[in-house]
Image (tube, rainbow, N blue to C red; front, side, top):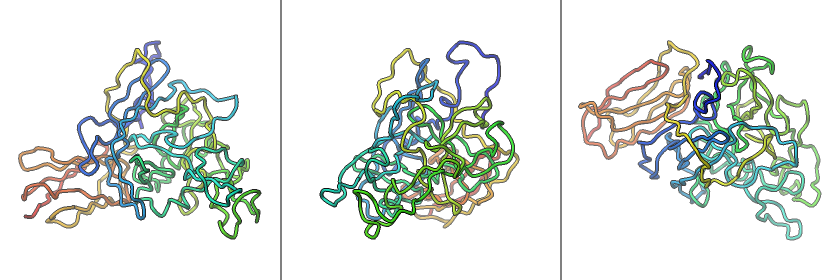
Amino acid sequence: MLFFAGIISFSCKAQVGPNITSWLLNTTITSATYGGYVNVQLVQYSANYVYVSTDCIPEYAIGPWPGNPNTPSPQNIVCEFPRNPVENTGAPVYTGGGVIGLWSNGVGIFNPEDAFSWNSSTSSWQMGIGMPYNTTWNRNALIFEGPGFDTCLGHPQQQGMYHNHVNPKCLYNSTDSTHHSPIIGYALDGYPIYGAYGYASTTAASGPIKRMRSSYVLTTDTTRTNGPTVSAYPLGDCCEDYIYTSGAGDLDAHNGRFCYTPDYPNGTYAYFVTLDDSLKPAFPFVIGPSYYGVVGSVSNHITPVGPDTTYTGASTAVNQIQNHTIKYVIAPNPVQDYAYIYMDAANMNNVAVSLSDMQGRVVRKMWDLQPSIGYALDMADLPAGMYILSFESGGVIVSDKIIKSK
């Protein structure tokens, strides 16, 4: 991760921090399958807000989505994040339907619900977007939509917005229990979202690492008041089946805590993606029923309020350990249409891949390949011949020859 040190001044640029630099910028690479640009296209900031423009399409391979007829499409959205977030001490602001934050690659974050709630008068599931937990019975997106998630645990909704309700498996290495997870996004209240692992201590940016545990516990009640029967809809089908129990885990009711991190050595409130002992998504997955901080705007079509500065630096997806070797498997080779790349579990996060022809021209680019995950490289429309496939991570570059057959 990047650390920021130096003399503090009152100029806007001198105080650029992780909420500006953690986004994965891209202004040149488009999605051959879905159109639009991958990752984040523009980051602007003023004294009070950060504005992130994105098409909500990741650079890694996504799909298919069994049983889901929707197709990802460029969204051209702009989200606003408070640059100096503060705790909300007033009435809770519940996470509603749609975008509640963005992953660092510009993909939307959705809440734990699938947008249907129980209406006891008709004994059927009715639309109930963003209802507060414990006031109605909202369907658990992991249960009802999970079978249609792709291998990256995301899917597109009706308007084509690709998003995750749960851990974005392809964005970072969620099996790495030896390093503090990177910032993988920001909530609309401006507070960072980390992967599943953080420092065990809440008083220093160092020490042993542990997986952050949710404090939501599945109820043992056998009935639901004015809700679906447990026999028809087993416990866990509803978000309200999970009860916040202080001390049951590491995180508060918002699924976060105040702590010290590599990016915020002076401390910050932070959300954490939660996984169970089997590394499967654990409720409430990303953010609890309400935000911890004050939300500026929940709209995803914000017009920045100037004067604004455009951030033009590189992304901060920097490995925490240097001097490593990049290991992978490519098959088949020669290839006719797709080359499949499997990244070894021992690799670091965020490996960049480029495919060049024999004249040195880059014809394909992929970012943020993660350990233990397979990726598809589309070579179907490339001319037959020899190409060079290069992997780069933490200053290490490894190259291999790959042949495109006729």
